[in-house]
Image 1 (cartoon, rainbow, N blue to C red):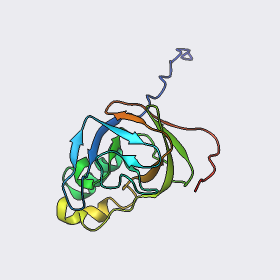
Image 2: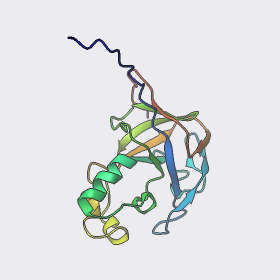
Image 3: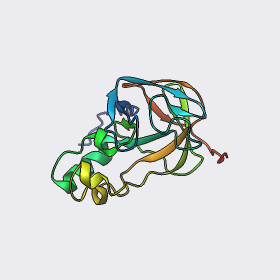
Length: 164
């Protein structure tokens, strides 16, 4: 007898922002915030890169941190990676020019964010190696708005030409 049960396929939930961290200065510990103002062409208000030309915000995934934690044998606190935004699951685009929305804010990929060796000091020996290919992506902000923990993250479908 053939099973004719119909299974409903649940749509995959959109990734969401699970944490936001700002570093007010170089080598100063990051601070966790519930929301942040994003200024187009400038960056996240209160972060040390605010006002830079292209490095406006960095985004990493909780899945990448979990994989790094398995490799390290200990948890990886998102704030210690010095990335601004951690999202729940989902692919983080890495191709320059690709567009992504966090809430109402539009971001454009600049480049992959390579982990620096200073992570070994903050997280522990081997952290930079464990975060290799899991360090997230650097984006520039194309629009302004507020980014809040819980905001949904969406890739913009279609070809996104790189901008200067």
